[in-house]
Amino acid sequence: MKKFLALMLTMIIIIVVLTSCSSESTNDGRTVIRIAYLPITHAMPVFVANDLVNDDDNFTVELIRYGTWPELMDALNSGHVDGASVLVQLAMASNERGIDIRAMALGHRDGNIIAVANYIDTVEDLRGRTIAIPSSLSTHNILLNRLLLDNGMSVDDVEVILLAPTEMVSALASGSISAYVVAEPFGARAVTTGVGKSFAESHEIWEDSVCCAFVFSYNFIENNREVAIEFMRKYHAAGDLLEENINPISDHIREIASRHLIIDDETLDISMQWISFNSLDIREQEYRELYDYWLLFDLPQAPPQFDDFVLNLYSLDPIH
Image (tube, rainbow, N blue to C red; front, side, top):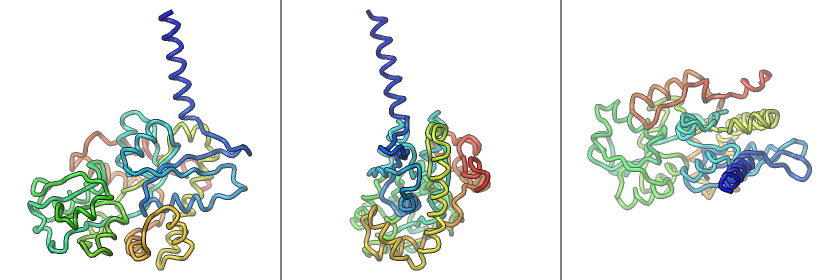
């Protein structure tokens, strides 16, 4: 009886895992791609790619909104979603732990700022102050380290805390922190609300910095190769469309943003001015810079090698 129960339990676990990792289909046979995101402007290519899907495609997209990076990563790591727009370092850490997640494209280029209180005028003014980042595994952490290093300081000269992005503007307003580095539009909100200002843009600290990425589980790619290729074609088309329509922001792009973000026009305008969506392929040289910074600033966990983590569209589709 014990052996029988153990066998049944094993079978149930296998069924649950296979079910959670298998793709769903609509009534008309179209594959459903479940994509996780946080409501940030860095995820705009996902929103626009979804808008480009039509009835003639052999797939449809289900966008699933999460409130925090840990919640999103739990869904991604457990196979409850097929892909995600995510901080690239979080996906890299999961890949290194044996969860086969592959980075397919960047989410954006540059587009982060160091937001500071209005009384901060120099890097030296940050000495002894409290600075918030969303995760130790983030480009925001690297940008902060690099800013301090370039000015003869280090994180030992400040107090770095982890804080949810949604809490950063109010924390800056209350004086509990003096600066933060985080995904957009939270930097722009410091500016539009008047509680802070942009101290430095990411391209001034690390040009073409790698921050967010779009990732798929490798299981999804293996079982839905053509669907993955078709979606990534739309994703790159979305990047091109964004790049062509954000200066100024077209009404169409503004309408797409309004469906997924709670954001006023002024904040969206400022936020998008800082972000580039040009050429979202992940280049090996850029990844090597990220890898080297990861080791230099001693981020948690070892990063994976490029070939073990990055799978650009042209790797799947030579015509791209």
